[in-house]
Amino acid sequence: MRYFIELAFNGADFYGWQRQPNVISVQETLEEKLAIVLQKDTEIIGAGRTDTGVHARQIFAHFEAEEIPDYQLFLYKLNGMLPKSIAVKNVYKMFPEAHARFDATAREYQYFIDLEKNPFTEKYALFIKNKLDVEAMNEAAGILLAYKDFQCFSKSRTDVFTYNCDIEYAYWKKKDHQLVFTIKANRFLRNMVRAIVGTLIEIGSGKKTVEQMHEIIQSKSRSEAGVSVEAKGLFLTKVEYPSSIFLTENE
Image (cartoon, rainbow, N blue to C red; front, side):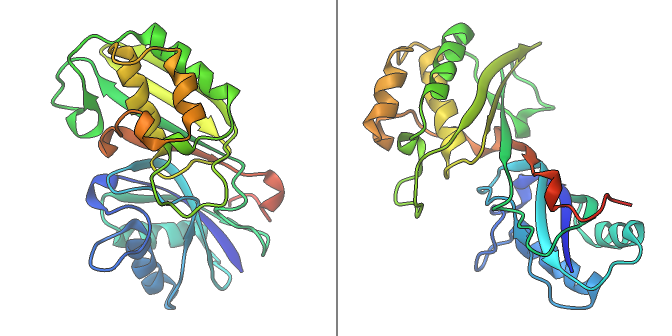
């Protein structure tokens, strides 16, 4: 039987989502604990492959298992074994063909920037002391919606069939002494959000103009875009699915 689990994790403790040799990943940690709870080696497939240091407030993964009779007991046992940096929130029974990665219709990310030094958010936001032109950054972010091909923001030598993404919205919002970038699309390329944020920061600091955003995207060259910002300020905040793939509501 196929199940989805909904979880959140602090990416500071992991070398990304995907299992890799000689380093600790979210996928490996979950699989090890699931094997104990289910008493069977269990592979999980995530909704995306977050990079080292990137956090997730919401992400889903699917796995195969025999009937889980008590969801709350399952969650209690699994969370009790997982480290503090991972929290499993829900489990859902799915149709057999449901896929955590390929059935996702949209994903939302947020990037956090501290505009003044803050010891309580330092591990989860990029500190920029220089003044940024937020209006220009929002104007440039709006240009993203006019394009589909974002090769210029993709990590070089990545193995993808297409660089096309449908961006639904992208904007900056200032709250107190923090600046938050929110972007939603049907899919994202590797390093894409961090490269976009880096480019928008260069526009906000006057190193690039708003009009240059068109040239950067049209160039399809990673070297034309800005540097990638640190992973610590990036959060996967939402993953959406069609309701038709859920077999039943969570109990």
